[in-house]
Length: 526
Image 1: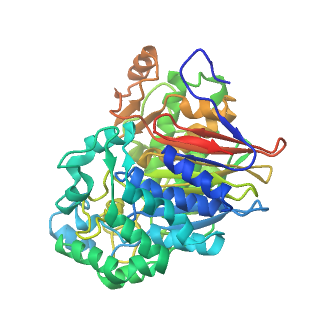
Image 2: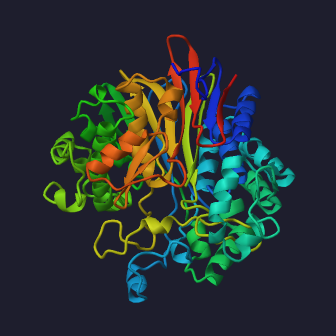
Image 3: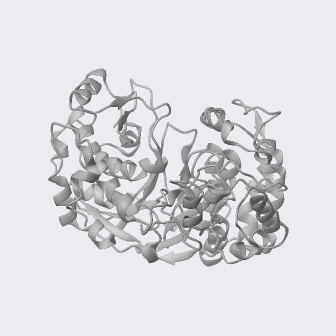
């Protein structure tokens, strides 16, 4: 239980249904869908579609989505991969010949075909109760009426507005400037696209005038995208991958998502006595950072389009994890995880909803970097993701860029089971941080017995590009100790990640929700 003398928020409790997400309006719309007879899928799609208007720098119709779903009355979990593929014309050799060592982040070469719309249509068709028209109606309404920009959204918008190019500036700036908190953002052209999807399903987006607008805009920017690329886009059901941490099953999406990284990281950390350490002290942060370096090194070696992955079993192996754990020096930061592990290996929104029948949805939806590629379609203002930046141009790598392939993805929804019974959908936004965020949350709950909201609120750390990012919640002496261990400690400009979770207390018949204060959102129930 949190200390009520200190600022913070309590967990939210409800009997019938709950939503946790990063914007309060999206949470409210999801609960309204449940109260009006919709199920968790109807509510999750309604909230997710609206998040594209509430947080357009994070997500939108030009992005991708991954979903884990627990059907009502069952404990099995279904995975739906709503990530799009590279256009058929993308060619790594051509990019290398042009002098590129990696795919330019803000270029049409980084734009993969949006998969989220097809994913939402399929979800509602296969699992929903009220249909696309009902789920998209709130987003249509608010896209036209407008939404006051929330404080965290305004801060992110101002930091990232420089990435917007040409037409995108007309749609996502107000009189040439990023909006300030309370400014009203409207997207009437997107409302028209949403109406077409509501009336025609996926054809309203991947065919006809909307698709023509996207193709023409991308080709004008120098892309190879074609109408055939868009028409061929289709989401796919896949089998979740499962790991365990001290009696809890961690369910993740298989590649091309990076969920296997979270499982590997959890397996590495099982080799250390974390409960004996201060949850927010230097020793735990050090061990987690070293384990993360090794887990992410494995990710960068192996994760790709599932059809090209050859080492997934190796990555999920507890023996692999134990061997990597032995490389961790408890007193010193490693300089080169790739060289050390050589012998062992041969921005985003999230929404979770649980309904009265205990159907649960864990849905993550993103355009990758802030404002994605920075390129928007000229007529409808659809902002394109830059997921193709997740490819590598390394010749022969399983994740080498190629037409028709899905790139390695950072977005990963997750779920937990205990003793075979489903107990929690959750997610942690934040790009590459997400596997660390998953494992940090689970460890906070299991190793330290923190309640769900306190487990989310606690300070975070993340090693990236040779730096150890420590949020300001860590004490000064912790920073000093970590620096003494050889870490290059920095305070990140913005906080790390944004978690949302709903715990199902079966014995009491109660739902317990928590939402990250690093974002503008909340958990709501009824």
